[in-house]
Length: 327
Ligand code: TRP
Ligand code: SF4
Image (cartoon, rainbow, N blue to C red; front, top):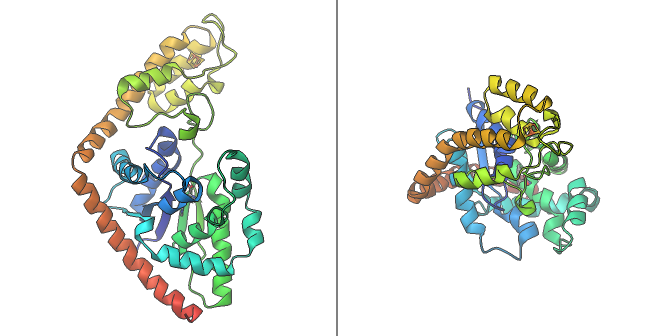
């Protein structure tokens, strides 16, 4: 039986950190067995906000694909490609822009939030407002069955569904209305307990050397109520403990939990233990990453292969689309 297709993308705004791994990537890895997965680098989307600073864009594109493979995404199972290499996304985006009512875009919660957040950048641009229209083109040009994303992207998938319905209604039934495939919520936070993000400078990267990871872990904010080693702590509100829950064996976790609550273990030691386990888990990824970086021809071949496969599919859809629009 033919596998159902799913499509998801990532903006090339930096190297891969643990937030990406436990948010999107682990979910993508799970899905690559069951679905025909199209995973791409959304470089045009990166331009919607970072249009003024493009010097690292190409480096990030390659580094992210290297990090994807190092983390366990498999080019034998999934298709990797680059958005800007498939011009059909742009053509479909243009056609969708004709039929997308402005109020849909203006009331998009992600849009309103980001405008507020990104104080210093000028985001009053045409492209930024149209972000979800481009995303709809990314998804629908492959007639995706589903879109695996985090909760923050749910409004964009909803808008994709609305655009698909509107197109089908105006012209012809071309697009399946794609399903939202919600990723399980990640408990991993940045070292300052905020959402892990490059712009907050609180991220742990899989490309970080071991001593840097140890240093970052030592800076992590723990249970803020626990001021002295003799104070009992609450692991449930401690960031380090959430990491233990992922990287430490069950028995040790139990021990840490009870030791923390009775002030039997200090945070310094607890962190040292966690850093060691985290480094042990990252070590194989780090090695694979180094190997790939010294064999970039192989990586470029994978991208070329993926681009080709994606382009073929997109071209077939666009013929249908042009015919439906009669253009
Ligand atoms: N907006 C997504 C994000 O920031 C990235 C993205 C672009 C995407 N196009 C997509 C995700 C299509 C899923 C499908 O995470
Ligand atoms: Fe967190 Fe460990 Fe300190 Fe408890 S002992 S507060 S779990 S770092």
